[in-house]
Amino acid sequence: MTTRSRTRGTLTLATRGSDLALKQATSVQEALTDERYEVDLIEVETRGDQIQDELIHQLGKTGAFVRALDKKVLDPTAEADAAVHSMKDMPTDSPDDLVVAGIPQRAPPGDLLITTDGQRLSDLPSGATIGTSSLRRQAQLLDQRTDITVEPLRGNIDTRIEKLLAPSLQTEHEQRIEAEQGEITNTENTGSDDEDIDRDETDKELPEFEQSIEAWFNELSEIERRALERSVETEYDAIVLAEAGLQRSGLIHHIEYVQLDTTTFVPAPGQGAIAITTQGEANATAQIREAIDHPRTRVETTVERTVLAELGGGCIAPIGVHATLQGEYVHVAAQVFASDGTETVDGSRNLPVDAHADAAAQFANKLADRGADELIAAARVAADESSNTESTGE
Image (cartoon, rainbow, N blue to C red; front, side):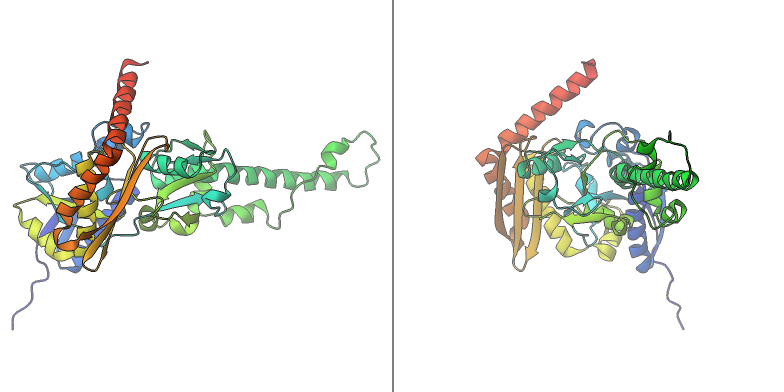
């Protein structure tokens, strides 16, 4: 009687060390383990991780979160068989011997508007402050609401949510303390004959709370407790984050949110998808593709990234591209904005699935001819001027 081999081999995956990156890499690890591979993870620090005080489009050439991982894959010492990336972070140009071996099924590609009470964008007051690190989201928000302010927002997902929650939680905490102290003061002053008691203090109207401070604190989630301790620099009325990241991080159940319509807020190319890169000729390439590649997601993301590559926007221009496979066609929608949201070139088309890459390139060229290339060129000039200003200290 023959015994079936327990494993089909060992694979080493390179990943960033952030909580979200590790959860994405772990999901790939588990998928490969289900296919009887032994999988190890190695953590790599990228340039994007090292520079915490700049927005994504200010980090220079695209790939701030990618290059260091792929270097481990291409290194002759073969430290890693593959690297795990958020596809939206990947540059459209890559070394010739690097391939995307696997693309698992994509998570929801859209964005969420997150507030403390679940408000819609239209419900926010005039002058509201919304936080995002994305040029695309900034332009889309300003396109919809010219009366709001968009402020930079950096950090991992946890940090960004804490920055949103901190002001309201800290205010409530202070109110609870004042209410509790007010009750004590009023009790102590009951029956007093002192006519000089400050009536403004004793008669101050304080909010009533059913729970004690301790009971309230014990019911807070971990992220809410951390928000209580956070120093507040900017008070955000809302922030915008990708739904996929919130799902994978497990934080979506701790926030109030509204889904943003993907036809109005067209997602970034590849958003919600994970890409696993390998050396083209390596054994790992075929192993990973066979084990976890999702054909539908590959077609959709190929269309999105082809449009982005043809337009040449990278991370410097506000560009959204979203493709959906529909039978024999791939429906693709794209938006290219001026950075301030005042100008837009957009369009949509049904592409034949059997020639989706070539058709996507033709669609991108049509957008360019209609003015998208001018908006991208202006964004590139603005990015260069910003970089030169920072380098000279002006």
